[in-house]
Length: 458
Image (cartoon, rainbow, N blue to C red; front, side):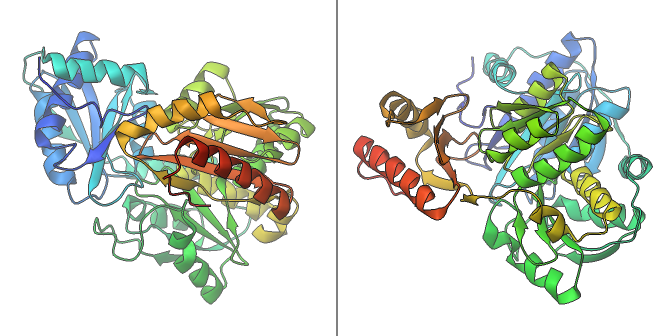
């Protein structure tokens, strides 16, 4: 049995620092374990893709070497956004695939998102894959490699579904991530006037990091939307499964508020549908979905976990604060920032209002973006267990679906362990700034009582 660090094997994907936590040897072994699994299932074929990371070429070579050595056939679909890998396994006879991507993590990271039988691996399935890598009992064979271009099929499928009733002008900021390989062509095909910002794929990420969850990464887009007087600005993370939105007036619309608009639209066609949102999302979702006749469900954060909940529940739509939006109504149920952007453009084009006016009609609150407490991977879970044990402030409802969400009369605060980086993440929301400050004070006091040397971001 090989001794392999479990650190890259996370709750809903595999991810780590290249050449420290994730190197060619480990990726080849993962390929062998995955290929062995597919051969045992009698499904010895899968799609392979990668994003624009600098480490992508060497790691994809290692991955394919491992897969092919088990007798598993590889269909290489090239450098494409993660949603196109999901599209492939949902749209073609081969139902499994793997994409090498570091998503929104720093440039020195890479990872693997894996789908088997159309379902993204998470939790126990990833732990089983880790164990298979450690055991080293791999099938032997010689698979065949082929290539397939799926970009035109994907664009055709989106454009057959989404129709814009009037032309729109938009700015796309791909942050030099892989969205730039598809997004401009897609939105032009939908009939938009497209202004490109950082749409050349460059794994150095020279202008800003491809993570629309951070306000500083959206400042160039805000300026460009104003400069060209665009109707809307769309931003994508490194592998384009997450969406960021800027209004015509330069306001950031966080994904939980995007989900409100999407939910209202879906419920017009599917009355009574279930809508899933993660524990980091606004409390307005519950009331608005109920008022519109839908069924709101709060669930765990994590693209694989939300996606599986969507499948299990039969819900029509799901979303999380990080920007993953999952449409089951009219689409396949996987997270796709490109498609979510198209659906938003459709809603905007159907209205005679601006995007800022549409969102002005949706209740808002005082809230924070995601805040991070940096801790080591070894500290993260023990500290979270201590918080769950010790956090019992009076007057708060405890929600422990994922981490700890404390719900007060006028707002809430959340702390949970990140599944992608070495940190605890927090978010706060309240009906006014004073109540937000009160909730943050409670969290600050409780956290420092547990560990006085914590560096708090609030």
